[in-house]
Image (cartoon, rainbow, N blue to C red; front, side, top):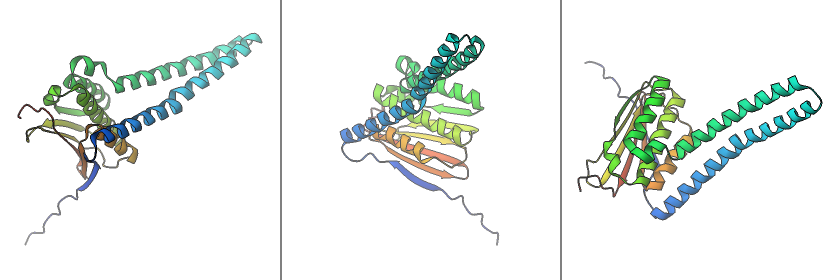
Length: 229
């Protein structure tokens, strides 16, 4: 009798459930999002610009004392930090509302994201998300943020060699978005909380399954015009 090969152990976790009053879910998720952005701004750009101000004060003092070379060196560091901060704020603005999403829709925005991050980290990205372009603007924006956050989290864990996103509507009026990657399965709790916040703004169910081959994230969103109802 041949020994049987044990099947991979799959762990499943529910990240968000579309239960309760939708208005309360949205308000709670939006409050969490505002808190996260405020924390980022305070700990990142605000602190950085405060440091720039101190360096400029020091430079002015050095100039008044005729120590121009040292002042030039400090001003150079201040300029470098300012450029970094501008980049951080530009990234924040893009992540909040990408121009491609606003002007061209979900498919174009996700494709641009996939090409950019895929090239940078040598990830093979597969997308089948045309169904989402028929949804409302707010829904598209929330789903885009979920895909982006899932990709960034996979990159932090890996990066992965594969990242797949597929949207289906096997049940009329219900959208299912499935995101798969083959990065190591360790996940930061804060990343899961962010994904949960995004899902709750839609009143969606979000579950996570992971095993030795990678992670599968499934989002189920009911009450959507999927074209079959």
